[in-house]
Length: 144
Image 1 (cartoon, rainbow, N blue to C red):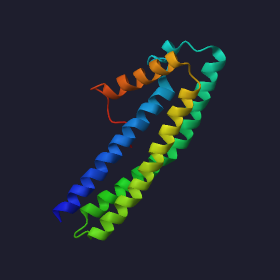
Image 2: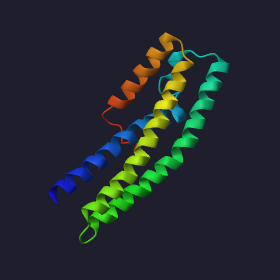
Image 3: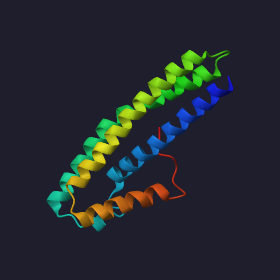
Image 4: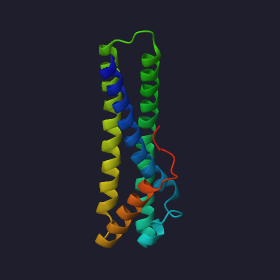
């Protein structure tokens, strides 16, 4: 029983970490000019392309975040039930991890796509900005 709880906590923790990365990406998509993206010094065409990629990313990520929220609520309901079986918990963990994996792949693909369209110096600034955003202590978790 104790091992089951640890696994559930580890899965929840992983979901939070993935959510944070997704949130950083979405926050940048919504607020990149106010959060240091102007340092990239993109021309208007490159900026429009970057914004279009951000918009596409948000559109793909939103439903995945909704799906993860639903699966997390299902896990919470399962854990709160009178006597959840280890098999039911493992099944729900697998469902959650499947969504987490799709979020990770979507986010990674987005960042790599953005990177391909930047010069080496812009790439350095882009990822430096991401590191800074992730390390901000007052940031609320962006995960669903």
